[in-house]
Length: 430
Image 1: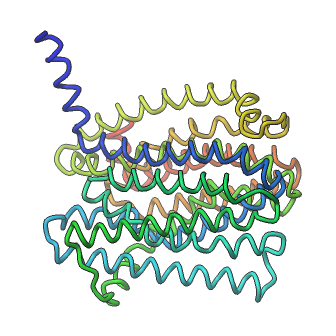
Image 2: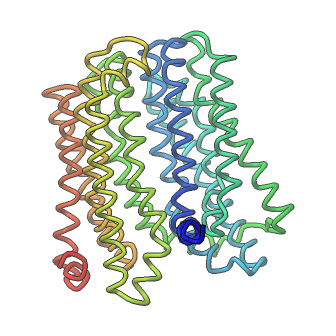
């Protein structure tokens, strides 16, 4: 019995580790999003058709790109500020008020950009109405308090709230989306439900955590925006590199091809979130170890990296082998073109895991400029190469371009680290 207790106690300590808890709750949020997304795909394809499904996802890709502007790097900087000031209610109140004010303002700017582009410049003609109805997602992103709970390292409530909003979205699809003409309501409903749940979370923060909402301090907001510029630009470039494929394909293919590609892409890009979750989860502990003991930090990061790479191989093999079954389940039909896309893209999660070490090294050493340079070099490569290959080979060419981008960014980060911080490079790779 004592042997059993000895086994259970370390296991309990393991799960009480803050990095593990952060990863588990972030994984819970993303896995619930994955599950709801997977369940919703066949329902949407049957209700609105494959071509409208492709346009809905295309509009979602545009909104997701604009959400990078709304987030503006606060997803990395704000949790740190909350963690530092977690015992100071006044400071927390100012941080919360300024961050939410800045993000709502940015959501308004992003909405204005879409409206001018759609009605002033005549862009997005094929899916203009769907995109306009999707603008509510920008304000859902602006009011999402995930960064606040992440900084407090208490993410249970926001995880449950996220699942609840996605379940309501799934119920809304079943009850209200029944024809292609209703496709404009899909993203609108997702944004409306997310915004409603976020407002309830803000009410909880104010009422039960005693966080007040002050008038925005414009000097503080302007200062935080200036400090976050490199993070924003890095995130924007990374987003285009990872998620811009559907937008590039829209210039060369019809709506049906977009639908088949987006079906495969959604499966893979959900798995592509895994490396980012790992970095977010280990970042606080990695930063602390880096400051206290560099050798312990290197050992910690190597252990994490090796395990993640092994898991990436398993995911790659599993998705490649089961691709026909996955597409059959999601679309309830045989789509050989989608299967081909999924099999080629299945290597992306593993290739993305290769760069976890480099990205973490840059973050803990505060090498924002290197991260910025790497992100934009990756972005330029992806756009140019993927556009050329897509024009020549269609969807398969795009898949090849995206795969090669993951390899190129790993090599770019290696070279930049070696040239600009050899101590860090040799400490990790020696």
